[in-house]
Length: 186
Image (tube, rainbow, N blue to C red; front, side, top):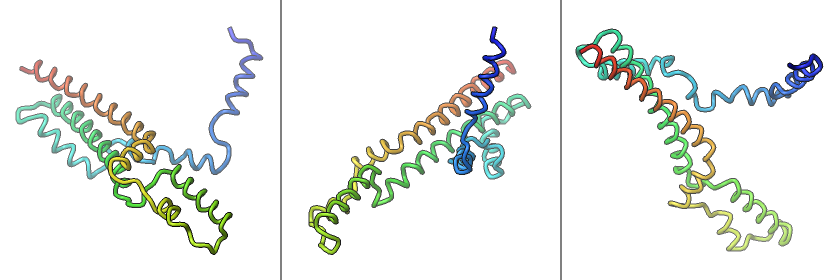
């Protein structure tokens, strides 16, 4: 059993570890859920409601009852969620791949350091050497660029993967429930 003194210390510790204290930190953490909008249910979006109903009608088939209609709607919702996550992942990677000047943060810092080093040694009015200019204006291309983008966006991609796994799991269980309901109704 926990003593009164230990409970008081635990309460004091809990009060001091309840999130960000500064206004800037609180503002930043308040935007966490709005980063990509995938935590919002697809049912809330009126544009997606029509798509959900069309898919649900297709999944339910012509001879369906209220239970099968509801289960088909759950499958449709899960499928739309899967589509949204995949579109968000595509957008994340496409924007970076489509940017001709994209480079990693580490490469940008290295380029900045090289320019500063050149300015300090040669002076601000001395033209950049050819090899320094090539280095500063170089950007990764092709498969190397894609690999660097994947590496730099790994955290965001892993978050999207969790959303996708959750939506795929919802869809799988909804499909099983629909199959079970159809077997029962025969």
